[in-house]
Structure formats: C-alpha cells, structure tokens
Length: 139
View 1 (cartoon, rainbow, N blue to C red):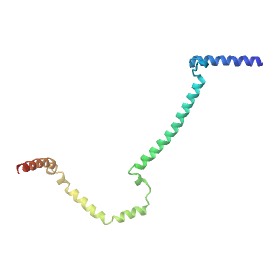
View 2: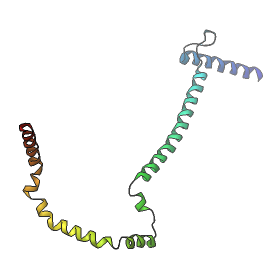
View 3: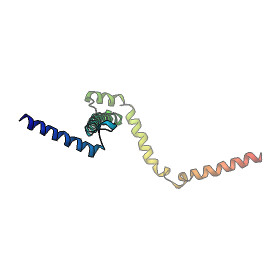
View 4: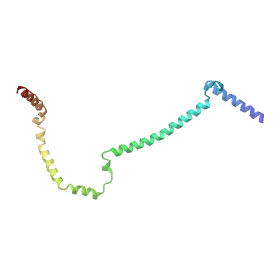
C-alpha cells in the first residue's frame, strides 16, 4: 500500500512538473517562474482589486452625500418647524405688501419694457458712443 501511494505521489509530481513546464515555460534551475508562483501573484492581484473595489464603493457613497449637501434645495428639504416658518413670514410682514405693489407696477409697465424703443437701446448706445468719439476728436 505504501509503495502504491509513493508511486501515485511520484506520478502526481511528474504531472505537476509537466504542467509547469508547458504553462510556465520550463522550471527549476534556470530561474524561470513556476505556475504556482504565478497563481499566487494572480490571487494577490485579485485580492487587491477586490479591496480597492470596496474602497471605491465607499468613495462613491461619499460623493453622493457631497452632491446631496451641495444641492441648493437641500436646506429646503430639511424639516423646518412650522413655528419657524411663521416667524419668517411675520418678520417680512411689513415688506410683503410693498414688494407686491412693486411687482404689480412692473407687471403694468411690462408693455413699455417690451416696446421696440427700449429693445433698440443697445443699437442706439453704440451709435451714441461713435458720435461721442467724433465730438471729442473735433474739439
């Protein structure tokens, strides 16, 4: 039985050496790498990649949080108590009617702002600039 096991181990050894020779390009004394060494290196690289993947997942989560905090409406989404909202409104109570009246005036004057005369102001400004330069040169 012991002889049979020794023979099997020797066969396995030969098979492993043959596989290393075919896959690894030779073996042993000439300093070339063994298949087992290469497999260990591949395993280490895969472990490094897996570890980095976890760190990248954590970073993506943190980036999402930063984007959420940078959103201008983030503060609006935070829970503001109704009493605080009421205080904001009451603090602006005197200004609100004035602002409403001013907005109403702008609404009433909108046709004037949209008129062709007002729309042509940039063209007239350029012409006035040229005339001013001519006037300065003539003096």
